[in-house]
Length: 523
Image (cartoon, rainbow, N blue to C red; front, side, top):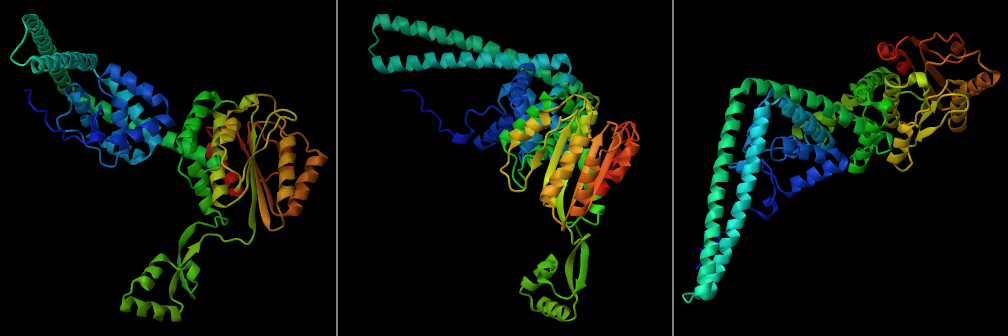
């Protein structure tokens, strides 16, 4: 009788998962979501596996995304070089910082893992990668031979069970031939296994000989990967917010659309990098603004107003402690309860925030990306202040469009992708879209709302037409109305008739810090 098969101790959800990490089906589902968001991850993982072994990008993702990644004890032989390499990477200082940026974020972990693996493999000595790849191939060959030998052994067991002790001569010869085939396969399998073991030893020795260089290269790769992961995550979150998904998790479909939009448009290639700067600058100016109505600036004691009472005061009330309760009552009688204070409460409501953005040919490339980055950063502030937000990209005469982010409209990522993908690449005529901005203000604002317009252009304003001046006058009569102009490459003296401030820069990117005063005026 054949020997009884050992009982499997491996849980069902751990079977058929090729990884150097403790991974289950739930982890593979996270990897699947990452591929949905970033389809190129699957191809990158396959390419890296062919260059080295295993699934480098998949395991890199899991090591960055999971809350407590652990390497498997007794990893599959063909994955040993990958386990060793990943362990070396996880021990570098920059790896910890990379995990801080990617933990629990599908997009950041996916981009970070792909960038880290690509740079790490490019820095490895060629013989290390060659031996890692060869040992995996030899081990796969040995495993295949073992499966074939096992199949023949199962056949022999079945024949012996069928014939028992009465084996006919012709069957005995067949059994002998099958046994010889199984023995031959085992011999070849043993040789392939020995060759795989030898290649693994040589790969390990090559890694050990270059330990300092590999550690430095992986540390640098982790630092660069963190930068790319942060930029990608910032871009995708900004895209989701701009599409109307305020306060919601970014869906894989939205993330994929965002990254495809970024890759498909040369004019936006610098956007991910510039978006971080724009958000920091706009948020900083907004916090300093007297109109930052939702910014907590501290605490103040005064007569009781429960809706604004500090959190720690609520904790004292609800603690059930008699001493704390008595102390709170005493201070309440004396007007000594701490309340949250918010910066710059203003009586005027917030009307629309409008960005009029030049898409003429001379604004292509990085200047266009910077203007879009400012638009997104301002959109975040508009959402926070519950303001309608409009973007009016323009070029030549009658070439402009109006894109609106409504507080009540259904999220529309595709409309945003179309908005970002569009670029007129024509001449420059800025008065038409400015008149349109005034019309929007006159239509939707009232006396209790202020409206703000930011114009970014390298066009030259001629003498304002009576139509424009009348539109601006009506908007200002309608309620508080501010127009700020960023003029690239020209002074635009005529613009002072309708805009204040007028910020002149010769180079939009090099002098971008000068844009602060324009941002301050409208937030």
